[in-house]
Amino acid sequence: MLVLDKPAGLPVHRGPRGGPSLEDWGEALRQGRRHAPQPAHRLDQDTAGCLAFGRTKPAMAALGALFAAGRADKAYWAVVAGDLPDEGACEAPLLKRSTAARGWWMAVDPAGQPARTEWRVLGRAGGRAALELRPHTGRTHQLRVHLAHLGAPILGDARYGGPPGALHLLARRLALPLDGGPVMAEAPVPAHMRAALAACGVA
Image (cartoon, rainbow, N blue to C red; front, side, top):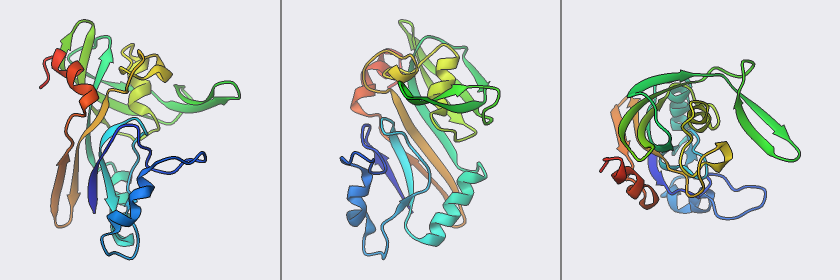
């Protein structure tokens, strides 16, 4: 397996309109194997940080089983516009919606799929808060929608009510309980998040 530090703004898969994606690096990442490594989970295009890849079909099956069973320990960092209690959890079901005018988005809806996100405040300053987030489900846009639902949208997440700019969301750590022993990876803070985190007292 591989764990890459995916840069913000780079999609994992090539979209219908083309453009750069991690698929462009498949040959370099193959490293002599028959097949290019495949992602074992998802990260949004504008989310930076840890992304795990399986290098073989058995590895992909094993990683897929870990993520499906909720055994992959994922921690994210975010900076939000607003404030929250020191710690807590959001349990709000998510449903995909779409219109011709707006396209698609995720919304809190009783008819949606169950979703749970835990948070812990790392620091606060000037009406903003730096958070550590732990999703216990892997719904599309889960962290972004849950935080907007709590009245604290992520900086740069204009789609869900956040102020404009680059998305301040980082897949900070990933821990996997593999048969050969646990593997843990930690992504560095990207340049566009450093000032906001530092202002909240997070180095």
